[in-house]
Image (tube, rainbow, N blue to C red):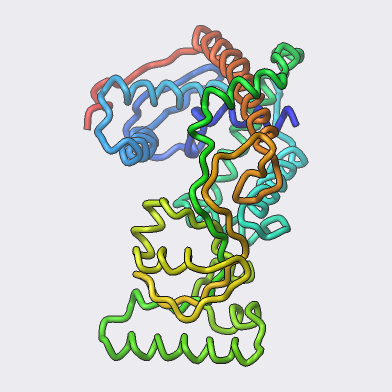
Length: 351
């Protein structure tokens, strides 16, 4: 459990494949055991992602802060090689299996993601499998390196008490309000590539034909596999997860009429053909929760497997471990910087 919680501490240090040297201008060079470049293209990749996230251009000083994080990753890699601290295949596989289990639970599958589903999930997030596996190994190496330097570090983390949980709940109560939500599965006919009214009408007629089969006694799951054009949910019994009434992203993607229609349905009810901004749907309501203020003993969506009490306790434990471990990692990197030769190419930070 401690390892699982620990890994979140190093989110800020996840980087692309710094180890892969390319023919590019250097943003910096690092030498602890060997000379290695952090290139401008590597830096631009991270900076571009952050600028898209924050919707503004990073300043030169902020770019240098990002560069320093990349330098820290290089230092840990070289120090790991020097001190013979390696990530074992068993450790890596354990982490992958943990991710597959968590993603499967989040998707409501009742089983872990398969290898193929995980690889597709990674690609859907714009990351190559090679970069993804390198990032996981970088995270694990940081954990292993800190643990090797201070084996008792995690023992210094203060346990979370029931009083801590209650205090957090009381001070964040307004954040524990849940709007109306439904969990859906659907059979989907995609119209995004259709231009003419005739083509869209034929798509509607296809959906109506599927609905007729369903009303004639066909299994919803069988019809999902036979007809649905949602390639992601098709292999999850049509499950497309949780829809919250006030979710602006869902509203923009599917449209107001679709959102209004699904919230008219009761738990277990199946709709007629519903049109959205992206196509035609036949939806089945797997679960429905009315708007309310969650208590500590309520189950947390979307999995509804953990109480809010346990959820808060786990998050507080993560936060405390992150604080301790991030501090330890920063101290280790600061010491490695003193041992290393680091050269910045300031002119290459302006583009």
